[in-house]
Length: 273
Image 1: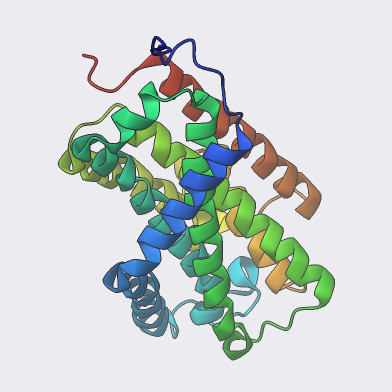
Image 2: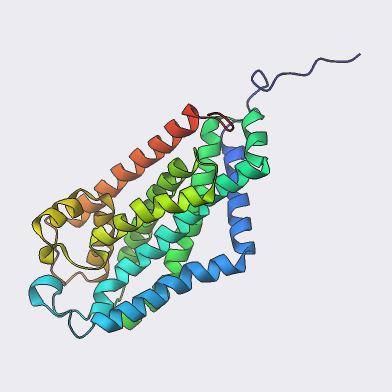
């Protein structure tokens, strides 16, 4: 006896964890199958760190701004955050690719909660960004960074929170878009300045008043500052925030970005205009 097909909207839900894990694993496998992307994500910030750091190395010596650090040392946490930013954001281009290939539509019509889609995609990008950032720590001894087990754990936590927040932000930007060109335009207009004004390239103490105000309200500033505090605990901080306050700010930023990604995914469906 034939049975009627159950509409997707009335089919029993398979839960959140299993589909989220499936999407997470798909993101990880797809990224590491593309060797060029893996190399580019690490090598580009590495070259940027070496070239910029060496170029400014002789001129960037200020006891008030950087505690007599060489610029290569000062710029190292910013280069690490750059790797996280590039990996997290460009991984979320897969949202646009999945839409154009029809994969995202098939996921949306399946009896899968929308939260599972957001969680799986964001966790996939977060995992990749965190791994890529931690790989960069292999150069830490070259810039005088000597980590204890506790400081390494806090660095991992900071990198993870930064990765999660930036990946969720990338998801929220990519979800309503239909072309990678638009995605790149938003990155060049908004996300790169977000990194530039995070204290990665220059300290707050040397910035003009209005730039300093922007840097204080930039949540990425607290990720860079937390990493710098953990890596160089004896160097003077350019923020009045403590390490705990910086990490708590990152937690709030992460929660807000994930909430934004979930709200965007629930507001707009694939193919809607």
